[in-house]
Length: 282
Length: 314
Image (cartoon, rainbow over all chains, first blue to last red; front, side, top):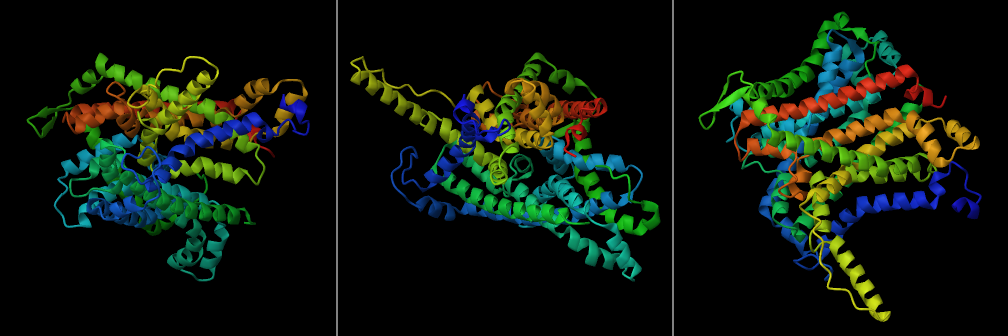
């Protein structure tokens, strides 16, 4: 019908059809309206949080002075930090291993590496719960070490993602560069450090941000591996959400959203640069 | 994926060992062994309050296929299936729109789809709770519309409508499916977009030139060519939806329990770890069957020549 009115629309110009635009607009509204409402109402000066009663930042103040919540946030950031470091090392090594070598059982190792990505979170969560109970993992260690169990679980589901990202970056590496370095007298380690590592860098940065965000966001697996003294931010928010919808939860959620959006934007920026530099002449 | 090239590990055993030990050991110790322990537990039984004996019994699996649990399994599959179907119907036009968007708009639309996907699952679920609850935004908007039409009736000289009764949108199956669609839509759109983007547009143009309508072209040309993308979108959406824990837990009512909620209960309140382990493995087998099905379909499509390679623009 629209074509009769505006004959300029080419047959494949789906995006210029009003029906398509309306559809995409509605989907975007569906995706964003609840989140925008959540963020806007975190500034609402009303306990019941239904009608707009004026702007306030007092709930952010309350969140900042909620010791349990801040402790949980501290735990989450600490776990995410260590998870990122360990995942980066393991993921980077795994990527180099799969990219560079042929070895027996390679397909099996590759398959096992993809497993943490596909196994349902709940299954991995309970497996970790049983595992730590079975080996008698001590639960009364002093802080940072008390976060060990959660960190181990997070590394396990994060590092295969890092390996995936880094490996796709390695695909654009010209092996002759490394050989040239070795011909010119570089040792294995020097060639790795000065030739391969700089090439991997954008992949490593993107992978690190991915691991950090995934660790910070995880709820289900943490829920099964956290003890009473090792509450993380999502687990704490969960226990608040179970009771009611309150402005404090809105404020805490907004903080986490802003944090992840920043992290993701940086990750996407590096990934983009990676893709663009990968397109250059090999 | 599997690079056929690469050097043999034998040429540089020491280097290989340095690189491979860490990741493989970690995977073995903190992934394969925990899963093996879980598997062993599924053949165990409770003796005493905290002690579990691995006795090789199949009793847990027998219990898992009792009508009560089979029904929950069936319901989880139905809910995940419905979610996947809705995501496909809603997501396909979006993927199509992104594919044919101008270069200026394309990255923004993609970012628009991906950004919520990066937002915390718990927070997105909570945001939906605030929309759906009795005094939530959905009911407020409906109440406002109701009032408006009531006023309109008065203006027209008709009887005003009765007072607005808020709908019960939260804590039921509707909320669970809506929540799952909300959370999993990006999982569907991104693989669909990846497949549609590789399509040879001249095939669509040819179909349209030869007189087929847009809808017919979509069904007979675009859908078969994008089949690998559709299948992977379906699997990528269905698998996490089937194992969803948080959405049914927070948005569902007493009758919208899914399999993950039952598993959680075995490990927390009910304290029947062996049975919970058996249920976990049933869920995992279902997941693996789906993934194997996808891999097999993909191979078949490649063989018959409708693989992604044919659709790719040269």
